[in-house]
Amino acid sequence: MSNEKKADVSKVVQLLTESPVKIPGAAYEADGRETGKLHLGDARIRLHSRLGA
Image 1 (spheres, helix red, strand yellow):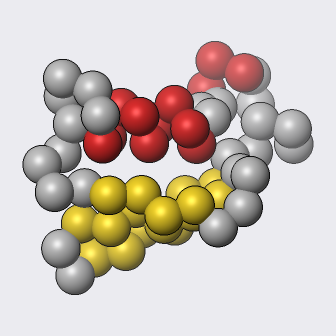
Image 2: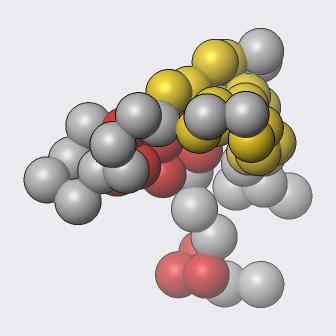
Image 3: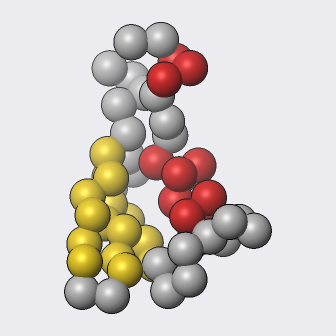
């Protein structure tokens, strides 16, 4: 997979929680350098960066 199709977790998190297009109420909980959980209400979504893969 080319780097153009990969996404760094930190960039995705910033987009979803802090940018002008953020999801209201979204919060992120890191549990490693490249992993964490995006919280939105009762939902939890695991994010994992594979940039080094």
